[in-house]
Length: 120
Length: 111
Image (cartoon, rainbow over all chains, first blue to last red; front, top):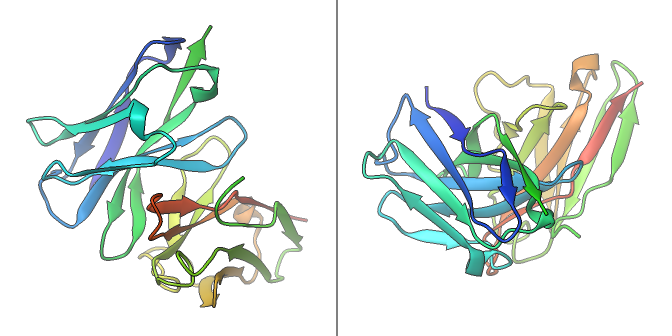
């Protein structure tokens, strides 16, 4: 059973780059049929899709964040990462990594989430 | 403002049934069967409860069911239990630039 776990700094200074890593256990990013995703949730708010990556390296981003976001897969194929540049207080949120199953069209596996606070 | 519209809150008594709607457009819900629903308890990550409009992952109670009509998808929970009190989110694939949309979420209160 695949499990996901987010890691990274819980506090980022405004204007800096937010960097998070998602570690995949019990499976590999190289197994086709899935997009490896980042989703965030502002405090007390709903879910926002940030983007995802296929094992081949193809990426798809939310247009509202596209110019600031980079999602990549590590050479190990057991981790993928999120970089969000020029952060502001509006980027304070819980960040989730999740696996999107292409056939089912759904996020079938989620990490536990990590809170990132942007300090001014 | 979310791309998919859900009621902010619904409530019901134990044993009753409730339905949560999720309204989109012909470019998302109306055009594809990639509609999914997620349950989120406070402080926890969302979990998948419905995919492909009507299907349940293994282990999800058959008290949860999904449907779709036109541009609106619905989640019905029958035989309400106290443990069903949570936030519920719909999601859909979209052929717009934003490939994946979420609803704003609905808070279910079990009275």
